[in-house]
Image (cartoon, rainbow, N blue to C red; front, side):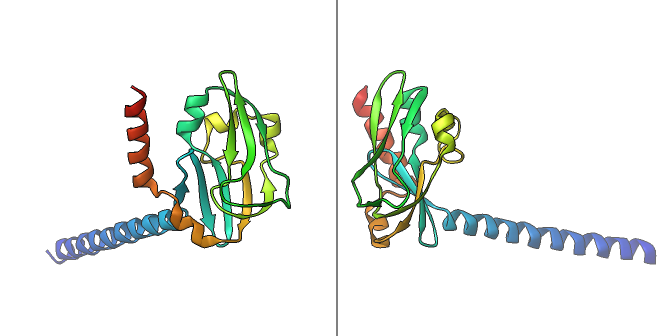
Length: 163
């Protein structure tokens, strides 16, 4: 009987431990999402900020609308850009489109892998398909951009207007 009681107590402690771990994991997941939250433009560019560095690319919606991307023009490292400036272009078999700066800053890195494999934008627009990184000069501009929910709503409205 004592052995059965110890086993029951161990099971209860284990269940409590698992419950705490699940709560901590959920908290970490939410924290990570907040740290890497993307902001969007109405022209379908995105920026994800960590510290004072923003990573910029085009959205999956833009990549899908363009089709198979065959060429990418990226800004040069060291270039100072202002919010709304043309920073490059993407060309597909269907169309070409300029890329605009979602925020102001100085380009610190460009994704040179896209020069050889521009299709990475189609495969992973929020991952390997990022275009360039910049050191933000006006972080307050992030407030002018759409959050995830606002962007999804905007996208639905835009799709409805097309049909």
